[in-house]
Image (cartoon, rainbow, N blue to C red; front, side, top):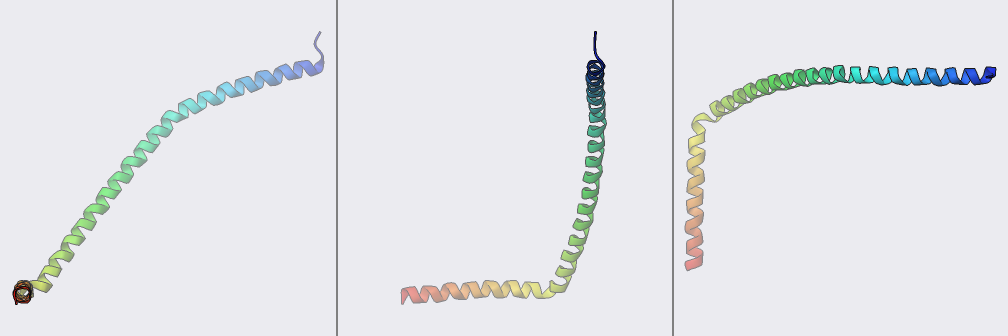
Length: 99
């Protein structure tokens, strides 16, 4: 015959076993929901980042356009000055090396 302590121990083992099985089943079911939730959040994050990148691109284009307007007519003279300076440097270098 079983004593009172032995029957309590068997009930404990049965309860632990059922709890473990229930826990594993809930984890397996929740895992699919978790993956779907993470996928959805990933899509939302990607959409948000693409939207922000588009806004950043637009503002950068505006800044470049304003910069070009600001530099405008002076840009050609700066470019020609730069070419003239390079040519003068080359001529000076030739004179120093040859002379």
